Length: 473
Ligand SMILES: *[C@@H]1O[C@H](CO)[C@@H](O)[C@H](O)[C@H]1NC(C)=O
Ligand SMILES: *[C@@H]1O[C@H](CO)[C@@H](O)[C@H](O)[C@H]1NC(C)=O
Ligand SMILES: *[C@@H]1O[C@H](CO)[C@@H](O)[C@H](O)[C@H]1NC(C)=O
Ligand SMILES: *[C@@H]1O[C@H](CO)[C@@H](O)[C@H](O)[C@H]1NC(C)=O
Ligand SMILES: *[C@@H]1O[C@H](CO)[C@@H](O)[C@H](O)[C@H]1NC(C)=O
Ligand SMILES: *[C@@H]1O[C@H](CO)[C@@H](O)[C@H](O)[C@H]1NC(C)=O
Ligand SMILES: *[C@@H]1O[C@H](CO)[C@@H](O)[C@H](O)[C@H]1NC(C)=O
Ligand SMILES: *[C@@H]1O[C@H](CO)[C@@H](O)[C@H](O)[C@H]1NC(C)=O
Ligand SMILES: *[C@@H]1O[C@H](CO)[C@@H](O)[C@H](O)[C@H]1NC(C)=O
Image (cartoon, rainbow, N blue to C red):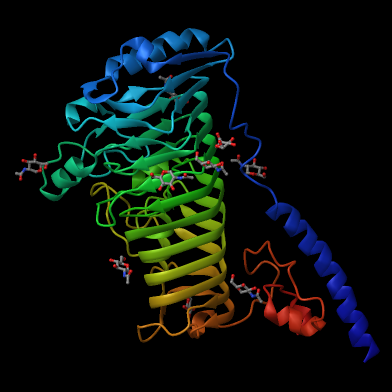
């Protein structure tokens, strides 16, 4: 049928133009332009400021004095603070502009077990209070605010938070304020955190918030699988963030993207967007390999994650939200994922709960749409997925393609409610609400459909990918 063939060719031609423009979009890397190894004309060693690397002497003053001294070089190309081999006990200290904090491979910066060495600072405006308790929160071990051009790096040196004492206080309900992070940078830009090992964070390990141009590269982050709330990397109300080449084994989410909490996050209105995540291997105990939320009230969008390998976790991929959060999660693309020993492989759900106070607006419903998950293989999976929107607030354009979990333990394998979307090549078979192939170009958020088999017919192409040319049917 000549007409039909020509029609098919014409469609393919326009599809190619569409695909090329999508591909160009996809190849945008939020990792650039970053210079992770900037030369600093001035360098000092922490011992020049009286630090003693015996694991016992408290060196907070030495860090403060060294950084105060280096501040005079900030406008002269910046400076490096070198931490040599040794065990350097310290309380929290602040970074400055144009600084490289560089650790020797045998250097260990150790956080004090005395919580008084971690001063209490104001809550984040987008949370309205500490995440765990009302009021302020303990300051991160390594803290910075309103900074430009900061590098925290090493030859795989270590930053150890000695979190066990904080986890105990969490479990026995004797915390005074919300637990601290290992690194927090607020209102900052041009941040690099690379080539280091972080262990035993009291709370979330790395927390860029209200920041942009953040590169997190080649880290090892470790905490026991049963340690409470020890998320590893939490970009929060931040943009142009790149996270790559990390091994993470921790008690909560491996990577989780946030943007503020209920009415405080809604009014602060600072989204997280343009986030690239790739080549991450990890396990998360009671958390997820990759997650969004549950604090997402400022919105989360344009997230590309690929080449992810998760084991021994409660969740693989998770979007968590609730009525009252407001905000949105959209344009999320996750691909090339392997999972093993994961209880719930994919969970996109709106029943999380946890509110900062009773002033939140129950009618502030999150808008969850355009989430594509593709090329996923799982072994030893409990439940394939829980895809549960909110009554009166369907989650829409949830698209799954080439997802294979073999046989899973739960029956039914998928639980779906208040959800709409599309799928293609999913096993075990997905619930009816998502079992059709998309028909419109805009149905799914997909930027990666060039990898088509060259010898497929026009029609079979349209069925086997999220390529939506409704007139082809
Ligand atoms: C990490 O270390 C490697 C090997 O020493 C080095 O080539 C690379 O530039 C470092 N990366 C960063 C971001 O400092
Ligand atoms: C840091 O930046 C924020 C946002 O621009 C501003 O509100 C705050 O006052 C600044 N803080 C300092 C100490 O300059
Ligand atoms: C990662 O860090 C290790 C230890 O510092 C280094 O040997 C390796 O080259 C780094 N890899 C990359 C890709 O930077
Ligand atoms: C860095 O150190 C950690 C902890 O000792 C180790 O597990 C990891 O393999 C090291 N990474 C590299 C790239 O050498
Ligand atoms: C709670 O745990 C902390 C840290 O281990 C400990 O110092 C404290 O005595 C404990 N308090 C109670 C009431 O058990
Ligand atoms: C996100 O990336 C796009 C394309 O690279 C860019 O146009 C946009 O300004 C970025 N958004 C933010 C908030 O930086
Ligand atoms: C499976 O993962 C859980 C953590 O979610 C862990 O406790 C358990 O030991 C793992 N099982 C195996 C066989 O590794
Ligand atoms: C399906 O996903 C697997 C795992 O990522 C990949 O190896 C395979 O090529 C994909 N198949 C298709 C048809 O895209
Ligand atoms: C919500 O999604 C369900 C399928 O899960 C569908 O039956 C229902 O019509 C949708 N509701 C609205 C208001 O679109």
